[in-house]
Image 1 (tube, rainbow, N blue to C red):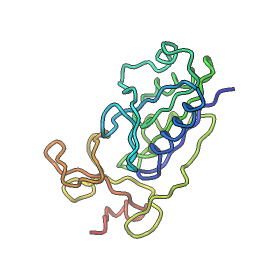
Image 2 (cartoon, helix red, strand yellow):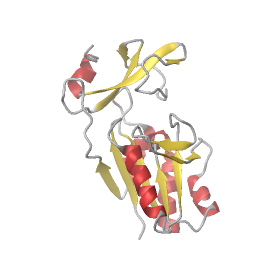
Image 3 (cartoon, rainbow, N blue to C red):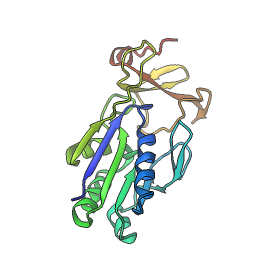
Image 4 (cartoon, rainbow, N blue to C red):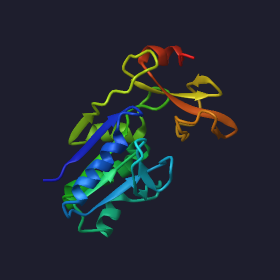
Length: 199
């Protein structure tokens, strides 16, 4: 019987790495599946900061994921990265693929956005998943405490306002997005609430 598994964590907790590992393990056992992503920092692929990557189908707002599974039938699994950016209907389409097509779905995403609030896709996955797994790789705040939040830093300051989806790379603080230097910083709850990036 197929399962809908949602694995979640902060940036740096190994979500994409685990997604790629699951895809590798299944595909080398002659199982056929799809790899999906949304807003990956390198385009139409799932990438890990460890340097591994795999081609992926880009999940756009108008893509019906159940219909996609039917179109590629027979498939055994779907590996879905960056699921926090999927819409509520797309999350429900994944559940239908599990229930109606017997396709295992492995979904990965951030738990909260830069404001500390659940993403729309994350909230729905937490509500409907058969299994919910917090990733065990603990990212750390600059103070050494467990990181629980992904803070958005704009021009050196933590911000709690703005568009929910702004893709930036945590390794390039000088990258200009929309005319401003945007990066993300992992913080513990205390330093997130204080807006303190330790510099």
